[in-house]
Length: 250
Ligand code: NAP
Image (tube, rainbow, N blue to C red; front, side, top):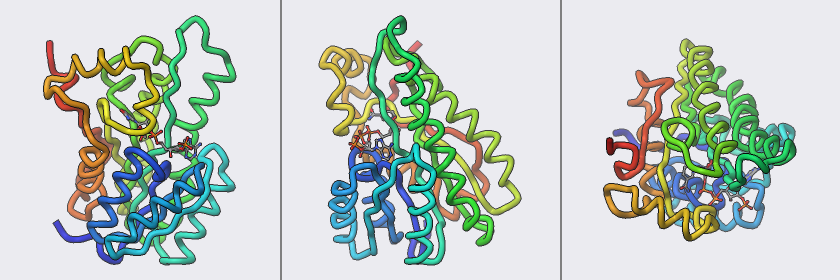
């Protein structure tokens, strides 16, 4: 696979967890990386870490629920590198609520970060990609919702399934523009966010992974690395599951 030398990648939610893993791998593979996160200091720290690989990396404060902050994010990338080749629309949250207790506000918040955030992130990057006639977008969905369910994560699963629906139609809309849109579906990945889930939840998850261990952010990042490569030009509207075999057993 060719290096990503000369390419620009944007990673939302890149200060921590899976997004940080993606940023590190894309940087190590040659891309200049913009890390956008609601946690500005974390984004700067992550960018400093990615820059150790010798690439340019910058941190930007962005809340994916706020389109104007995402417009700013894209403008920063374009001012610095004059192109946007890859977008990992990864920012997401996964609070758990019993089905009967979730409020309209809680439901709307999870939806606005996980679904509207991905939509807005794509919207601000697509004009540059269309102009370049080249782009690679990867959404971070999940096995939860798109393939399986988990108690107290119904609202979350709904957002992650929605992302798959969004991806398929969006992929078709830009298919003649040299742009692909795919999704990764992680299983249970050891991240800062994941460590905040209950010990009982994590124990149940671990017991259901045939490989017998949680995934690492880099396991997801390498899947993203493939999907953002020029070589993946004929793959669009697809999901790639990275879960240590969790959804396999009968
Ligand atoms: P994480 O460790 O919590 O990292 C997520 C990052 O996104 C954090 O830096 C967070 O900032 C940031 N963020 C939250 N809300 C944001 C917003 N509105 N705008 C911009 N950035 C925001 O989470 P993760 O486990 O890496 O999860 C990343 C993605 O993978 C999510 O979409 C999640 O649904 C998905 N996923 C994760 C797993 C897993 O097992 N970890 C499995 C399947 C799918 P703060 O820390 O300041 O909130």
